Figure: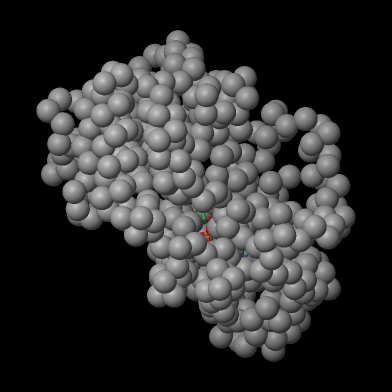
Length: 468
Ligand code: FAD
């Protein structure tokens, strides 16, 4: 591989070809620190042309390529396997915002731009780029697109797929496809953009994208409602959508157990309710009229929900600080859960109407099979996306419980399937769920996916061992 690396050094500069163990280490372990792979080099090209040059060389030398953005992915998609035969291709040096067009309401950005920087650039131009997730300070737009990330505003604005109009891609053969079109209508054949979005780096390298921008809302309001059951939360969701329409930008569910974990491990955090409740719904409204308008809408919904006995109590944030403290509860759930011990995570999606039934049926099945298991259920209810995590029984250690991971997954994923859902809502398949998906997708669907992969990447050099 010396000849390969020497040519790479000439193509992108020796300082951007990392081979020392201490330099490559940060690129080889996943964010949750579950797996460390091996790569014989980490390459950091600085332009689309340099990416293309490296991929051409990989073709010539038959070197597998693992594309990597911020390495915040949760399904082992952005790190190599332990064979040591691959390179990691880090896109983080492609970090320019190429253009902001406030009339077309688009911005063209390079794949390695950090999501938070994109949000700020949009805001500086008086616009909103609505993709938002807890990893936004380190994830990149290339990673967001490749995993079709969701986040907290999908209900109103859609997944990353819906926020992208065009792409620039380096193909597995090292050619550059310039599809950077800022068009909202373009029916000229197969949609290659949609093929690359969500492909998790298995079909080529995304190097730039045209993103959609939106008007900045004039006012935003957050509320927290206390309820009895997930079905009551669905009722509240329907009421709010009927009255507020697209002003509803976020609707999150958190079980009382999630909140009890947060207050147990972060004792300074307290919810301003007199007593604990079994479920909570977090609502976020964004309005293009005024503070008063959004306040009136929300008060109407809460009044109606109290009158119909859908909710027991509610608080409406009166300031940005109060709004932040409500969101803090939501964002502290994964942290509190990690302190409580290792747990078995599921990122599932269901038809919204079947969520209540899914939770009660699956809770029961798990209790029968694993008495004392504790379900940490929260998520983006408005999108039908639950983080349905299972923590160890109090009398059992987390490590012993983790040995039952496959059996727990079987119960949960089979139940998801029976309820018409998907075993990966927003995190992707990566290496983690690659074989699990075979149980739930038909042979026809898997074969179509394999045919596409084979046609575009016949040497199987693009992120091998991921997705299919
Ligand atoms: P990486 O982790 O580097 O890569 C992800 C996948 O994309 C890999 O398969 C990789 O090979 C591929 N890839 C990366 N860049 C490119 C490229 N330019 N071209 C081709 N392939 C590429 N996800 C959600 O959807 N919603 C959430 O709410 C959410 N919350 C999170 C909260 C935390 C605290 C963390 C750690 C993660 C969260 N995630 C969430 C998961 C993760 O942040 C997202 O999937 C994110 O979009 C990944 O971006 P990244 O740049 O880190 O990509």
